Length: 374
Image (cartoon, rainbow, N blue to C red; front, side, top):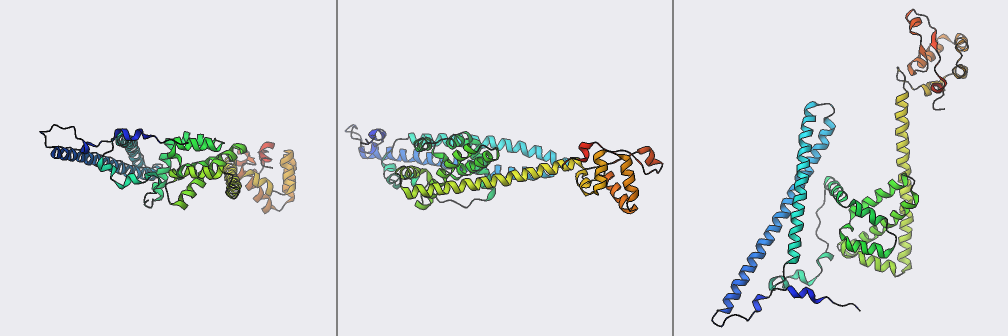
């Protein structure tokens, strides 16, 4: 049986109902003065909160603008000394704004803690806000720009990355529910997005079992967010409903969850495969650039384009055989092939003989150079 905690009523301020005043004191006037003083305190407190929120919002706006400027200057700084100096100055400004942002957030968090500790009174008890659960009402959200979304995600991850990873490693329904109850701020799009990236990273690293575990938690978060959308409530107020539903062995709901989980894991594997292929292509291109000869040609490509007789000469490193093959070829074709061999570094001319006009060459390159990439 669930018991109600009545201790929350122990700190209600109801001075308007007091009757322990002296008989010679004008009780109604006293209550009026007390009420006016309390209302004034409340107004000042609310004003302070509004100022703190405004200050934090303005600081975030300035920070987003400065970070946009940093990105622009990072591109320009490569070719401009003035841009590098400006970049240093703007980065210092960014650092200072981040410090100010943390200060504003700390002040606002402290203000909200003080608000929770304030005693209830006639004015606050009569407000509509106390007739319903505030956390379950989805606030009106303004459309965010891509830069704002990116900044919001980055800030959230920097602050809660360890907690998100911990949630991603949980296995039991009860453990997940309890962890979200203790950390309700994790119930959001930012957590879901980070978990998706985490799954792809794990799959790329070939940690398949771990990926599947985090994928499970990703779909848990996605289902909670979808449930919140359908109910039109804040997701922090409905995650318990998800766990209640999934743990009641509702077969249809469980099947839908499992189907989405398997589909998600397939998408993760596909994304990981694409990322690996891109990385391999980038690596191969980097290696190819390293191989390029003095004329900008790839020795592997040039070797593979040579006639089979010339390839055998390079394989055996036989200069006499190569000279014999060249004399039997069309002069124009032989000259073209040898020029490409020089431009790729596959063949190194003899500088002394080259200076005298002699077409002979110093030596064949090493076997590792000719057969690289086969």
